[in-house]
Image (tube, rainbow, N blue to C red; front, side, top):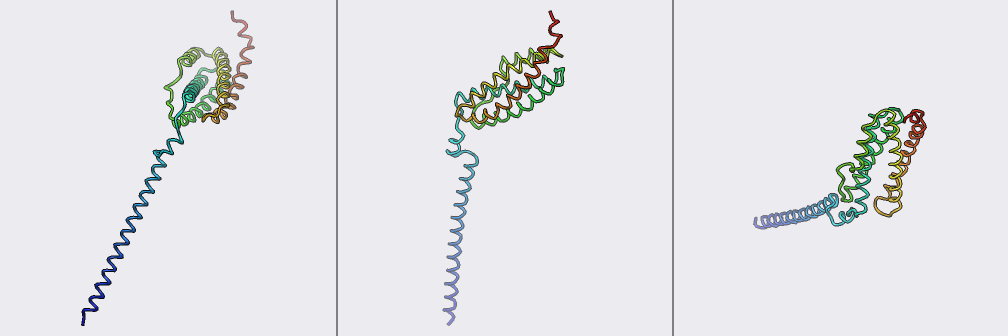
Amino acid sequence: MNSKPMLAIGVAAAFALAAGAAQAQTSSNGNKGTAARAQATSNDMSGKSTAGKSATGKASKADQAFLKEAMQGDMTEVKMGELAQEKGQSDGVKTFGETLAKDHGDHLKKLEAASAEMGASAPDGMSAKQKADYDKLSKLSGAKFDREFAKHMVMDHKKDIAKYQAEAKKTGPLADLAKETVPVLQKHLKMAQYLDKPAATTGSSSKTR
C-alpha cells in the first residue's frame, strides 16, 4: 500500500536531479561564453589582435627621418632655452629661453607618443652639429651671448618652419601634428627677431675693432 507514495517521491527526486544537472550545464556554457567574450575584449584592449596591429602600423622611412630630426630639434631647443635662462643678460632673452624650454618640452612629448605609436625609435640626443652650436654658445656670456643667441634662434626657427610646413602639406600621419606646430614656431621666430634687432644696432658693437 505504501509503494505508490514511495514511487512518486523517487520520480520527483529524479526530476529534481535532472533539472539541477541541466541548470549546471547551462551555467557552465554561459560561463564559457562570458570567458570567451572577456578574452576577445582583452585582446582588443591589449592591441594584440590583427586589427590593432594594422591600425597602428609602422612608420615609413620618411616618417622615421622626420620624427628623429624633429625630436632632436626639440631636445636642442629645450637645452638652448635652459642655457638662455642661465647665461642671458637681458630679461627678454631669459623670458624667451623659458618659453623655448616649455613649448619644445611639451612638443617633444607629443613626438615621443607619435613615435611609439608608429613603431619608430627615438634618438638618443642632439646631433653632432646641434651639440657643437650649443657648446659654442655656452662659452659666451652677457651681451655677446644675447646677440649670438638671438641670431642663432632666428636662423634656426626659419629652417624649422620650412621643414614643418613641407610636412604639413603631405597626407601622411604626421601632417596634422606639423600643422599644429607651425604657429608655435612662428611665434618663436617673432620673439627671436625682436631680440635680434636691437642687438644689431647697439653702439657698443660698432666700437669693436
